[in-house]
Length: 236
Image (tube, rainbow, N blue to C red; front, top):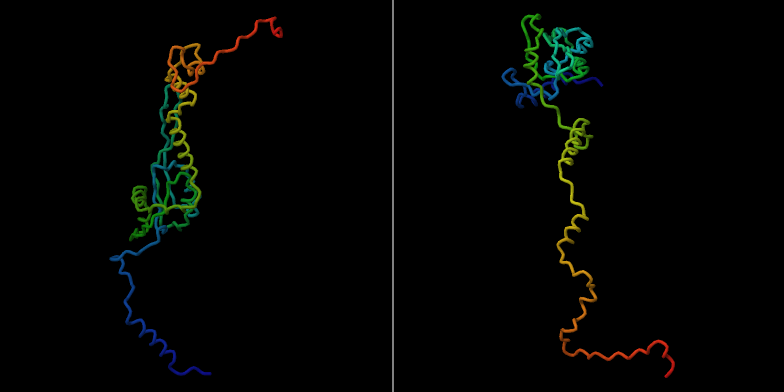
């Protein structure tokens, strides 16, 4: 069946009529900043205190857009009699963003967490040679890096946190005074009890003394029968 002439125009006008009464959703940049995802790959921030000049990021970069310069310094011994040590000191850390393809390999291979993704994206320049940013600019972008997302409540505790918690619990257990032993408490209570005279048993102390009057209603003492002397038994 052949299409009706003008049906396509009618459909287009229908779409126009439906949308012309709706409010526009165009964001007026730069007056209105875009709402970016929290882990947007904008630029790379540098936390130079963590950088040990291991050169892993520069060697693994597929575009060779990272430039690092450093020198060695001698560190005096920490204790008398120790030996001196040498360490690398960072002189230059620059990234040429005209060559960077934002693959993130440099951030992944950094063993000391010195590089981070920043959502900052407003770094356009009129000259391509100005897109090579030095470590001062990279450090400014470091403060725009968002905090990492919260861990899953059911996730396993990080090994570093678990080790620190166990060390704190062990230290607290060592500082807590040990509980008193049970036999020591019993000895202390026994020392506070009144002691009886030596040679008197409980049965003797419970019996009335001869010179003490007997209570009313008590039966008089019965005379004990005389016991025959030895050798006289059976002569009666």
